[in-house]
Length: 325
Image 1 (cartoon, rainbow, N blue to C red):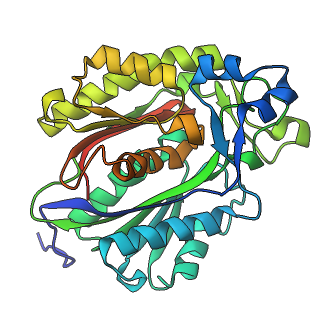
Image 2 (image 1 turned 180 degrees about the vertical axis):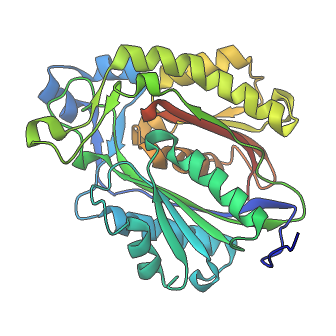
């Protein structure tokens, strides 16, 4: 049978650069608690959150660009070298045009393909798996992956179940070819039976448009799925907890992270991401923001292995082991 021509596949891919952007305004628990008949102590005990960043004049596209510029600089690359921009977000409310196309234009990556990926809090890990597959298949030599959220746009400030949880920000990585795999096989899936547990539909009437979460049910599911996916990702990559330098789950709730750490029996040398304390839950941006925080704090270094896991609306989940830039 005649074969078709095309780009040459490569053996592996890896993360070449990492960058973030956080809004300057930090809002502590006291300001949020006043609106929901709560307290700083109540919020800390139930989530591990002390503060979150909130966009003022920033936009989702603007934050994405700032994070992407930082990632490109970290990789020593120019935007013109990017062949594809994948933007993971749940808070961009326009169906068309996609935010990724605007980000690519603002960056100067005008010849790049661009697409949005909507898998809520699992968006970044899904986007990273997509970038890895595309680079290895030869579809693009370099892919810019961005997780960006302006959750303050979609959260009801008077909703006691969600108002204290979420923050704004963006994180990005550049994925490029490598002689061996620096991004492990993805373990992912979705449980559609739980699709109504996390709901957001901006097209509805205003009263029903805000994000709604069935907290207890989602919490129980996440405590089960996070360690299961994490263990599967390690098996797929052929590593054990002894090989890890960091564990970076979706920063949804510190209690979920603690449950996963216990279930995985992580040794003391593994740095556990705790960015939720100062950033809140930034959904698709939380994993790259947490990775960057660990690096900035000197808790990980280039070449270290990190286990990343995302989980959220859908109910969707994804995880993989990655080598840090």
